[in-house]
Image (cartoon, rainbow, N blue to C red; front, side):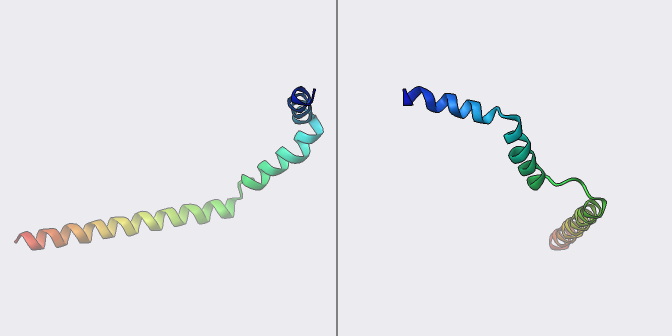
Length: 70
């Protein structure tokens, strides 16, 4: 009896709308917060700085390699 009641009980609990609203939706909002324009702007600025840094590093490496060949 216990063997069958556990899965049925878990299925019943997980299909409760109140449980879904309170736990799942709240947890999702914690993990994936709504987009805030300021945070998005900071992230885009950071990405741009990293692209510039990588490009400068690559150009320096290419210039160094060409200088070694000569």
